[in-house]
Image 1 (cartoon, rainbow over the protein chains, first blue to last red):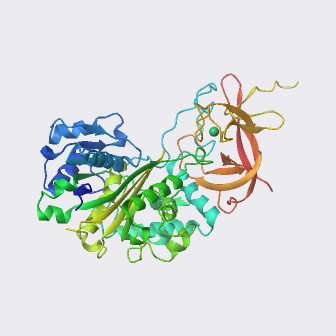
Image 2: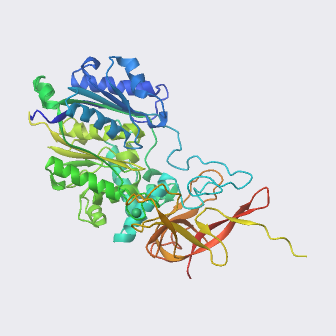
Image 3: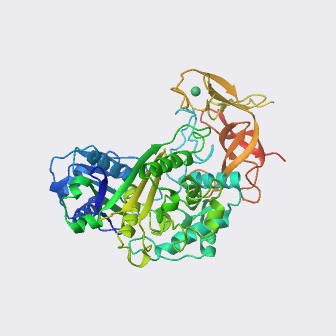
Length: 401
Length: 135
Ligand SMILES: [Zn+2]
């Protein structure tokens, strides 16, 4: 192993779903202690901690975690970057180790969302009794619902429909088939929030949230946490053979924000920054999309998964519909996507998602994925999008040791 | 006896009422990028000067969704979309058209229209814009 490479030494995700008896700290510390144990290290070894809990607002979640599992005085970063919060936390730990300031770092993402209608209607201010201009549009009342929609299912529905308008072939049934795939995949993932197979008819006949996204085509709000311990290549050399064997190389860790594009302030452009991140990641890793054995991408809605096939260059430009129809992205296909069940079925505890998707990849690269193991997996890619926007792409490789 | 006409105000700053209602964007004087909000500088080139630019009132519906679950107070279902108005993208509701995918399709031609959204305690009527299909 090259001494300047960075590895994931330990990684954990908790059960996703409803955790009535566990609070945010119970979940965060369960994941953190799990990742430390998985890596065969302790809090005393850690040189940096980065943590995120999007719904916690200004809460210093990193220090709160330390107060439960080890106040060692190391730098603690509280990270917030929408749905890319977990990936951003991981990148903070990665960069600290990469810089040589620490040998080990830990990143934690946690969320309690079960029962929250967050990604559907959302909150909205009341109209006042007299019209008063406010905000940067000088609107006399809230614009959401009156000038387009701010709801996530609606925004991502438009993103998918726009792809269909540009390239053709994307319709309600096709988007529902993507969801059918992810729900089917989740039946093999015991940590998924939902593990029920759903037929195409059930998916299309379910409650419509924002056409063409019905309820099972939307990410599942749930509770959960994930944590990862990173280590420098030089330090890893001094650890046990077993630790070296299970370590997963971070061949690329990329974070982008959305560059200006016409219309990007009218409808968020999740495409350009994802394509940029993917391109940079492939270059950095010296790996092409054809080398990937599996991909976990940000299917916050079924309509989003389609566009990211293209953005991550898993298919020729404009070819996402045919690519999906070929069966490539089913777990039996040539490019399995979201074998965890994805956000639609595994669940989407926001700040945990950007680490949980990396856990899924690591699980396969280590050959520890049990019934859902992608046989012989050596290289995987994990992608997240936080609307606003932030995109995290990580390429991970099985350890050569 | 003629009733006094209620005073009308546009729902947002960038909607201009009058005989020919239209939208006015802030156009960057350096690169031509257009924005609808109050600007600090241009997101494309960072230039800080802008001029008002009227936006075409007809366009093509580039994408849409039919929102069935919205925040309290918003009548559902409604159609939200992005209209390409001769190169300037505009976010709006699609109105005067049934909110179902048989009547709303990407690529359809639409034009700007206005409608009242309510009258406040002082009797002032707020006028919003939307886009309607061109028959
Ligand atoms: Zn400019």
